Structures are given as structure tokens and as C-alpha cells.
Length: 114
Image (spheres, rainbow, N blue to C red):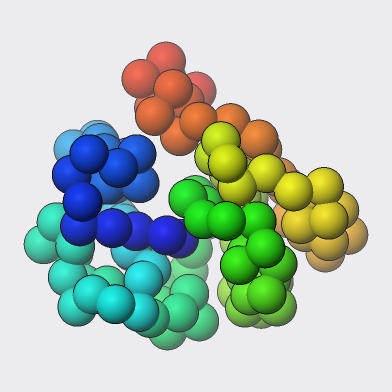
């Protein structure tokens, strides 16, 4: 969530690395049709496949406004990347049985912890 076409942004770098490692990636951003040759969805609710992990690159206040969308798809875990952390988000997701990590997706991928 928070996908971008800007190659210098961590969200874009993480998307490319996830794809390079063979993960199915579903970029979420209502402003784009495709990002890095992957079809972009305006909302996480629009993704038809089951989502295991949501990696977040967005402002916590904006994230709080769409928590119900995330909860509705029931992912196993959410990774709150630096700058997206929020105790309110974490508490809400945990109360719905969704594991929350405050971590950097890039570091997790590069160290084999993803």
C-alpha cells in the first residue's frame, strides 16, 4: 500500500525487490494503472487473490482512514515500514487477529527474514 512509480522511493524499490524474489505483488494506489508492469488497484479490496502480507508505505493518518478495508481482506500480517507506524493502527489490527510488524520490508528481504 502506498505504491509509487517514483524509482527513488522505498515503496518502489521494495516492489521491485519483491518481484525479483518471485513474490506476487499487488500495488495499491488509485493514481496509477500500472507500477513496474504490475496492475495497480485503487483499493486493497479490489485485489481478487488472497493476500498474505500487506507492506505499508503511507502516512499513518491516511492508513487509519482505510483500516476497515485491510481488516476486510484478513491478511495474515501487516508490515508497517518506517514512517507508517501507529499504535492505534497496530492495536486495531491486532484486535482483529492480524499480526503487525514494525520493520523495513527491504531489510527483511535482504536478510532472509521476510
